[in-house]
Amino acid sequence: MTAPVTLHGYHRSIYAWAALLALAEKGVEASWVESDPFAPGGAEALHPFGRVPVLVHGAAVIYETAAICQYVDEGFSGPPLQPADPLDRARMRQIISVADAYAYWPMVRQVYAEKVFARHEGRAPDAALVREGLRASRRALDALEALAGPGLYLLGGAPGLADAHLAPMVAAFARAPEGAALLAGRPRLHAWSKRMAARESFRATSVLV
Image (cartoon, rainbow, N blue to C red):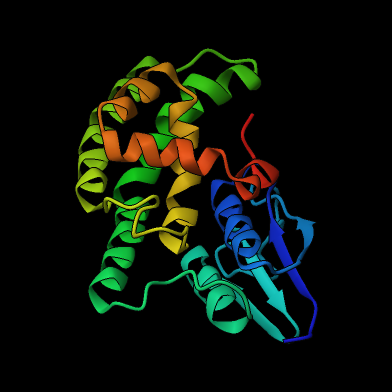
């Protein structure tokens, strides 16, 4: 596909980071357009709910991170980011679903936002939100630890969409000392997170403060 690829995202968005990771692992070059979802009208021209990221490829406009990443993998040449085995592919979708439904809010919007990003904003963390986030994060981490395979990455010997989707959330969570401690108690996830953090694609696309 030769049409230009543009990713509209916010420079602090964990989900925009996931899309950037998928693009990098696939080897797809994309231009970046900064779009603040918290500003009036910031992203509503391309996303009906005013969220990011949004991928524009020629006339195609794709929103929602999982859809963007699947399109990147299936629409461009490069290393495959989805497993061929049906069960492994189902596990990939499970990991992505668990990350979205049960991990993102407590790990990122509560623990990372209050323990790490609050300092960046010059405000005191909300201790109650941190406690609530840590409590919910334990269950999410346990589920993800059980789903993670024994290979170098979540589903084998090469990174894929599950890795790209989850790695930014886990990295943000681990910036908080309490998050890092919980992660250390899940050996597969802990080892995987270190391998992901060592990848050039990860370092080059990070949005963390």
